[in-house]
Image 1 (cartoon, rainbow, N blue to C red):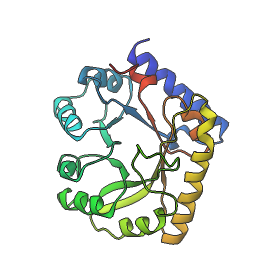
Image 2: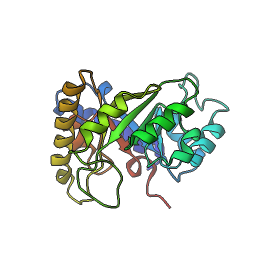
Image 3: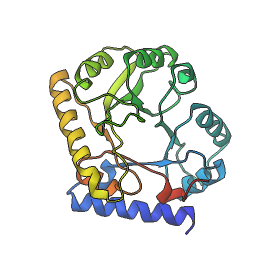
Length: 232
């Protein structure tokens, strides 16, 4: 299948998952995870209708954004919206802050403060990363430490805490992610009540389990392989 064909297949699956969950397809943003794929592959997905692209490395994101800024691949196609979905190092914040639609994985107040400092006067939307699986190899805070950090992030001028993200432990069975997705949604609801403000974004679900994530309330699904194929 071509990238365009894979994109259409993914959008159809997202729409079907939303229908089963009693949700509108427009309520779920597909973030096409383009990390390590060349700009030409992004351009093909963009021409097919993809608008949101996710990158894990700040320098790679900056280079691709510059390469694709020259023009639209199809008449009327909107400019791409970039998402930073990896673990952002503070010394790389200048490459991302104020340049992307959303930073998905903030796990410290110091990082949020640096993002705000580097955003050039803009308010940068961010998500609090929660490590629900307790995996030492992944960033993110524990559910117990999430509330005080959420309060700290919400107080940083120059960033906007818009919600939460998680990545469950690897599993062959898509249903293995369901408890983690439901736990993130419950934590989001509790934090929204404590903060007295909405936290509308739940970034969860990838190529193998995004339909389960949608059933659990995901607003952003991060899909790479199902759109671009396997990474080299």
